[in-house]
Length: 298
Image 1: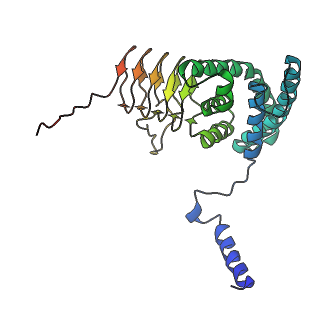
Image 2 (image 1 turned 180 degrees about the vertical axis):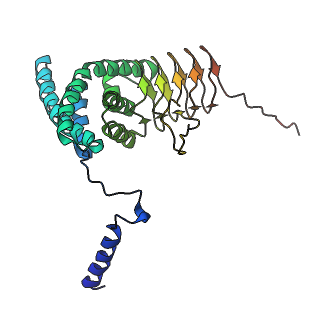
């Protein structure tokens, strides 16, 4: 085909795709506001990972506590500058007053930096829980460096703090980044306690309003999801509590779905391949009924 004909076809489709007034494309509007940069967010998360797990990630060598302190300082300053810019973009994503966004972004970024020690503490408990709960784990270092669950949980704990600081869009980008990398889908709105562990992890889903206590262990394929949605007067789903509450010291085995605003009582064990839509009291054990088989004597 001649180049002129190719360019003519391109021009025709440019006109069609640029018809922003067409009702045909009404659900994909022209976005005119600043947006977060996914590549910058990935750089921020790499810096935070180097800060929260010093010596394991990043380019710096941290053979002594002094060199580690220097490396953390450099990374933290870089992370602040990048995060400040992305929080501005996120706030302006919802608000057209850029000057207000800059003032708010500075205070929000500092507030987030002040929460990093607590995030590091929680992650240290998660690493300990995985070491204690997985006989295949040989060391803390192996878990930090190799286990995808730690990466997913780190992203969620970072995103959760930004979510609580009312930063739009950015927390979801952070958790979806880990979701894409690990197959573990942890919503930034979910509240997760200490000593949280995920074994294997592929296919785990934790919904926005889920509340997870301390010393909870999930296996691959577990869903803490919604059973149904409450609709408003326009027929649109309302953002109300709709995911499970998992109390302390609960274990949920693989491919189990726990759905709705129900409570799994403290110390309970939920077996694999269970569809659970009702609350269970503390120290319950929920398993499938035993398979019945008959052997022919003929």
